[in-house]
Length: 288
Image 1 (cartoon, rainbow, N blue to C red):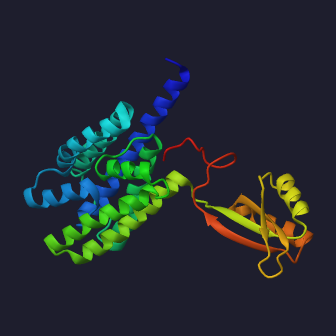
Image 2 (spheres, rainbow, N blue to C red; image 1 turned 120 degrees about the horizontal axis):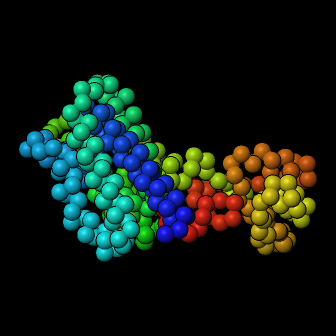
Image 3 (cartoon, helix red, strand yellow; image 1 turned 90 degrees about the vertical axis):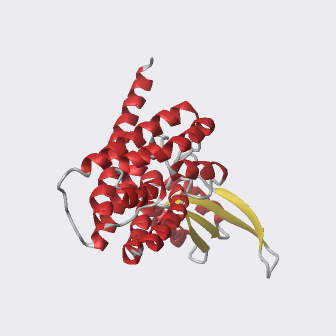
């Protein structure tokens, strides 16, 4: 057993433990105690709990059993072990925290914000290990495997909305359900921030008669790769060389400075690029 394997395993254990604790605290302290529903299997367990008084954590484990069979068939034993550990630990912590006399806020807005933040960060830390918290996370990973352009947070948000709507109709808690949507949105944003980073990258398209000079300055001064696209002016028919490059958001000012100093008449378009994989950005082999 290599030191690298032991180190990575310990790192995953720590991330799962912290993530499970944050997830359980966010749900039990902020959501459940303020009658704010959450989505997925946890939300379904909360609905059943309201009807039967069976502990939420126990219900989460029971509902996840068939889903984990699917996880084993599609993602293998490693994901099953990690996800099983995260699901079991978070469920145990949910029931444990339920016994503690903690009441931080009765304000719907504060509860939805902080509950969503805690849960999103917790889920993100767990996902960093390649595991899930079970439930709809498994379905989300299946969809994500076939639809790489859709982020995990977005997929989960859609499925959560179904559970929230059901809760609102069954128990007629419409105000709490509306705040639940706020909480789920914050959860999705926090989750994506942990997985993909707080800063989005930018794509630049630059049209200039001095493209060679601008290209050389971007590669040398900013250490960014550049691709030359060959186009044609629609009105004049003249050939055009278009600079295509991906930069960090904080480098936009540097690119504008380079263009301003080199060719003030240049045409520049900047668009957002949320997921960028390759040298200098995210690892392309990462399946998050």
